[in-house]
Image 1 (cartoon, rainbow, N blue to C red):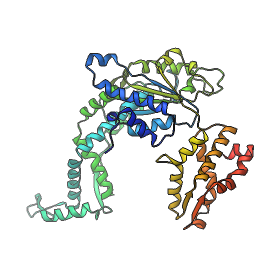
Image 2 (tube, rainbow, N blue to C red):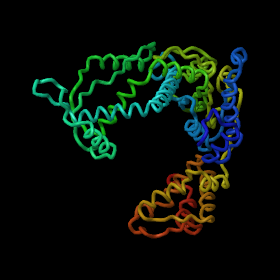
Image 3 (cartoon, rainbow, N blue to C red):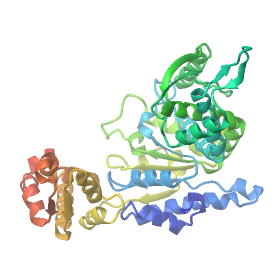
Length: 447
């Protein structure tokens, strides 16, 4: 069984990332250390624990080299609350848009969902039994006896009920229609309402749900099972315990990945950005990263011990264009390298989710087998690297455009190639792509 993130040693975290991300060893190592330090901090005594704060990380590198992919993979590994946000979607206080405190609310929401799912798994058997009983009650309703008392005589005896239970588990009744009375979803939660437009809108929606009346409707047993499962799970889970545990995890183990932070750097020569002050957004982010208390509908969250990982290409701006106070809150800086032709070759062959494996699986559904030869992959990597060098460098994303163009004919005329093996060797790659690569104008628009 695979370990959870907080049980993994730094080397194990790097090994897990190596399955999907080629190179960038320094970045993976620093992130693994930072995540492991979170686990180490939990084992300290209370006095020392207060003194140890996360060392936030700033990742610097061109687009398409793995910055965002590292965040995606960490999110999948993490059993700690994790959110990835875009710095560009926030606006300075006083402007219409999302305020920076919403990233903490998103993190807390992630933690609530995580803890709810964990507690639901613990109650899974109880929920399943309760759902089965409710469905069986619909299939075998009670009837009236001669005296008119409801429930005195059942539509079937216990043995019939068990027979129906077996049929239910086998899916025999999945498409049968039944009538249920569905109550409106209860969304009212006691907490602190923020002053953002999102909070106000959420509160208005919650208020509106109070006045909705239960209604009868006919649905399939399959759909009824889903509805009953949600209702029974909500009954068995202690919401107060969920919020308490989620709050602890958010404050002690939360991780926020801030992407595109270079786009809010205050460089007048960048030529991009809206009318909203980028420096104002930085100053709003600063107290969140430093440590402050944020009001959410689940209570007040202290951000002091949340780990922040920021990333940006910094192609048109420099890290020094960020305000000094914010620079100081990201003491660990990691530079990611541009991808070489050898890196492209490894990306095509080594990862578990390599593009070659994805396209092979897709076309196999049409009865077409793709056979990528070693020289063909090397030629493909060389072309991707050359196009990146001659036009805009978009990193590993270039492989997507190159592969689409390479396999365009096979994908379109799939019926012609059905039952065949298509060999992708160096000559095949050269034939399909050489003319486009040779023409600067064509490669700029097509690849």
